[in-house]
Length: 423
Image (tube, rainbow, N blue to C red; front, top):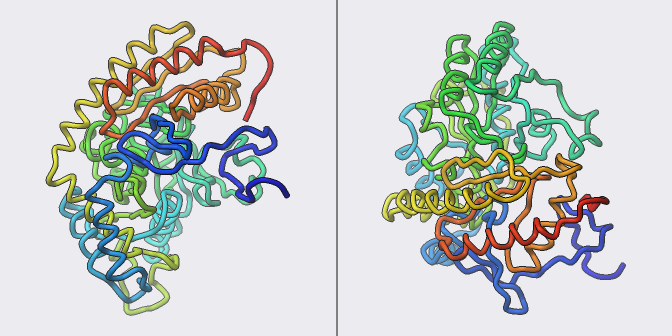
């Protein structure tokens, strides 16, 4: 073996492409070992909200390392976890009362699915089917792949995936989606899981709040649990604390991760309404909720989350989000004017544009080309096939956003028009 023994995620090592080594983070940028600065235009896979190395969050982490590093959470507790739970319950809609900790977006969605199935099982009702939306992505564990779109990225694991009911992605006013959901709900499924307003990995596909509200209402009328996967959309990405806020929707089960610690450490929560918890409350030990991991509610990660939530209470985070949205609109208008630009769209702090290519789709040659060009020119981008999106930390400057636009424009101008660079 030569070189690093590290096996990187979503990376084809056989192409022999360079892998930059990051030394530190500063606000909206990453600093490489050679001292060069890279603008983080995708929040390091959508996690970093207030910026890298936020002083308040870093201080909270350092302080917690001097008190308690780790403790079993099954039947034990600690103050950082209690603080996270109470702060979240205070910030979220009143009906969301129970906070279950886990480690990542995938695991908090797995938890949500298990909660939904456990709810019906403990009530003695045979409701097992999960409904999903076309083009969705909910994670890379077996359960979360099962409720996501099937494609090249999970084809090898198809024998492991369970069957689901799929409703179409909304077109126009979403009547196609609502009609299909009505029909599916008449068969008494256990739950519907959706990414509210924005389907992230599916191509940054947006749909209006009215459709989200209508889906939640259909589920309510049919007694189907409504699960909102806000792993990516939560903590301000769509312009509000939760995407569900824009539709006046309170899910039965809510999934949060990425921005929960400001993007500083891995931590996730699944927040449930009281009936979900009550269905698992019993003097019968067989009815407890069977899920955990060794690092559930890690105290250091919880300390980071406590400080992040304090930043939301005490600093003008919403004003920063609003300002970024305006700057993002300026960038979107610029990208929309480029040759081949299609379907320019913005939702809060997220912008996306599709570019016409001969090989559109997830394996389009545009993605590896633009990613490499951006890397070599001081910007971190990771297009979704022929979809270019920008989703930066809230502290990014207008000048840095303009530089991102320069790099996208220059990179697209040098895109080879034939051959394949799939990665």
